[in-house]
Length: 215
Image 1 (cartoon, rainbow, N blue to C red):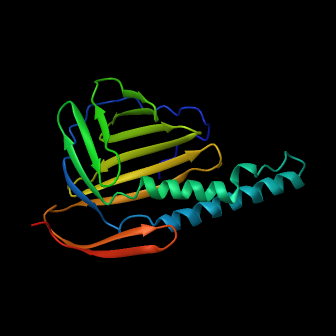
Image 2 (tube, rainbow, N blue to C red):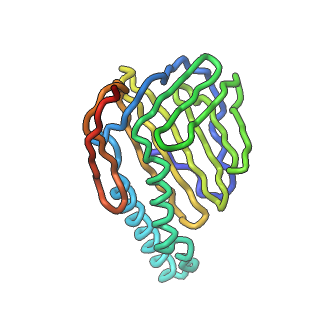
Image 3 (cartoon, rainbow, N blue to C red):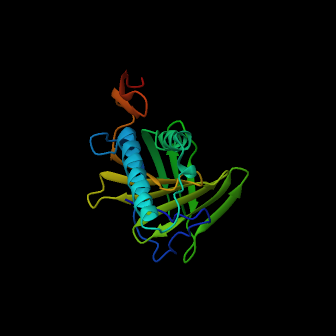
């Protein structure tokens, strides 16, 4: 899984090594059988923080340092998990890509836009924060720096067959001492077809509904 630095300062993305000829264009839907569950990711975070506390406790017993748990309150942990749920909620993606830019339209969320600049990243500032994006070899990366010490990192990878899209998402908060990681796998689909639509939630688990194809 991708993790970003534990510091609240900006963790720079890798500089573009090549404008890889990888085409993410198309309609994509999440494959829950291959994707991580938000609840499982939340439980994994709790386990890691518990191990962190245990290591600090052992250090205190050996006279090395002091215990610091203020950054990991229950409210802060749950808030980070809820934000991860919102960020990774889009089940459908429509990606439009050219030689100069890419737009990742996400169902129910804002689009991710990136212009390709040889040898450097695309940097944008807005009232919501700062966004950096660009190529890292064959992968496309997006880093968003949001207010209140929150950052979101997306790394997009297309499998060799071109029919599976992997998006590794990492969230970091100044209020939590460990990143929250969620891996999603998307498959190509026909946007004119219907079927059963499901989503994974932190509180209710997997929830499914029936969707009709548009006429």
